[in-house]
Amino acid sequence: MKDYRLRGLFKNEKIRKLFLQSWSVSWPMSLVMFFMFFIGLTDVYVAGKIGKEVQAAYGLATQIYFILIIVGLALSVGTVSLVSRLYTSGKKEEFTVAVDSSLAAALVCGLLLTAVGLIFSDKIIQFLQVPDILKIRASELLRIYSAGVVFSYFLINSNGILRASGLIRNSLITMALVCALNAVLNFALAFGTPLGYRGIALATLSSTVIGCGMNLFYLRSRISKLFKFSFAPVKTVFSIGWPAGLMQVLWQTGAMALFLFLAALPQHNVEIMAAFTNGLKIESAIFLPAFAFNMANAVVVGNLLGEKNRQDAFLIGIVTAVLGVALTLLMTALVMLNARSIALLLSPNIVVVNECVRYIYIALLSEPVMAWGAILAGALNGAGDTRSIMKITGVSIWLVRLPLSFLFAFTLKFGAPGVWWAMNLSLLVQSALISLRYFKGKWLVEKLPGAPEAVSVVIPVE
Image 1 (spheres, helix red, strand yellow):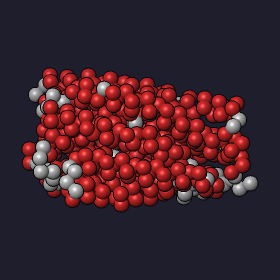
Image 2 (cartoon, one colour; image 1 turned 120 degrees about the horizontal axis):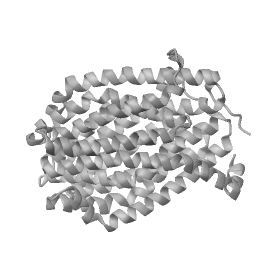
Image 3 (cartoon, rainbow, N blue to C red; image 1 turned 90 degrees about the vertical axis):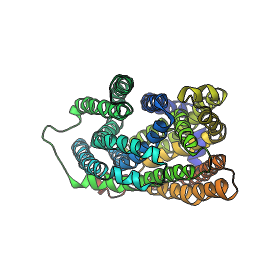
Image 4 (cartoon, rainbow, N blue to C red; image 1 turned 90 degrees about the horizontal axis):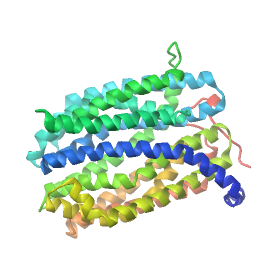
C-alpha cells in the first residue's frame, strides 16, 4: 500500500485533478461555514452591546444548546457517509430510501430533544455552579433555543444530504438566506422590541424555520413521491453516527467544564467567561476553512469509496488537508495581527478585551495543527471510521485538556492562560493520533458499520 501512496503523490496531473475535485466541494462549504460563523458573530456582537452579563449568559446557553443538537450532528455524519456512497454507486432505490429514512430519523430525534430541552432547561442552568446574575438570562435563552432543536435537526440533516448528493450549492443558497435573516432579526428584535436579549435566540429560531422550508423544496428530487422508510439505512446511519455523537458529547461537555473552571477563578470570572465566549467566536472564523474542508473531505472520500476508488480516496484526503491548513495559516496571521481591534468590536469592556486578546495570542498558535487533524478526521468520517475519532477526542479532552487545565489554572496558579495552554497541548495530541490512524490506512478496507453487504465497500488489499 505504501508504494502506490508515494507514487500517487508525485503525479502532478492526478494531484491537480484531485485538487479541483476537492475544491469544487470545499469552496461552497467554506461559504456555508462563513454564513454560520456570521450568525454566531452577530449574536455575540448584539449580546455584547446589551452587556457583559448577557454575553456570558449567551455563551453558557449556547454550550448547552449544542449538547442538545449533538444527536442531530451525529445523524448528519452517518447520513453523509452512507448517502455519499449510495449516490455514486448507481443504486437509486437504496439511495432514495436512505434519504427518506434519515430525514425521518432526524425529525423523531429532534422532537425528543426539543422536549428534553423545554422540560429541563431551567433545572440544568440552576444545577450549574455559575454566578446567579447569569442564571435567569441563560435559562430564558436556553428555553427559546430548545424550542428550535427539531428545526435544527432537519436543517443539519438536509444540508448533509444536499452536499452528499451533488446539490451543495443549494445548501449554500439556504444558508446565505438564513444568515441574512438572522442578522436582520437580531438587531430588529433585540433593539427594536421589548424582547431585548431574548430576540437573539428568537432570531436564530425564525431563520432556521425558513431554512428548513427551503431545503425541503430542494430535496423534492431526492425524496420519493411515496415516502419510503426502512430500518436498514437508519441502523447504518446510527452505527456510523453514534461515535460521532459521543465525540461531540465529550467535546461539548469538555467545553462546559472549561466554562466552570473559568467561573471558579478568584478574579474577573464573569469577564473571563465573556472573553472566552468572544475568543471562541473569533477562533471559529479561523477554523472555517478547516471545518468546511472536514465536511468536504467526508463527501469526496465517501463518493470515491462508493466508486471503489481507494487510491484517490487516500490521496484526496491529504490534498484537502494541505489546502485547508494553508488557508488556516493565512487567516490565523490576519487575526493575530488585528487581535485588539477585533476584540474591541465584540465588547467595550476593557477587562474582557484584554483577556480576549491574550486568548487569541495563545490559543491561535495551535490552529494549523487543529486544522490538519480536523480535515483528516473528515476523511475518516466519510469512510465511516467514526469510532477512532471518538476515542482520540476522548483521550485528548478528558485525559489531557481538562487535567492540564486544572493543574495549570489552579495548582500552579497560572489562571486563565493556563487553560489556554492546556487547550493547545491537547490539540497537538489529538492531531498526532488522527494522523497516525489516517496513514495506517485501515479505514480504506473497512465496510460501513451496520451496513448490509449491498451498501458496504470492501476493497481487497493489493
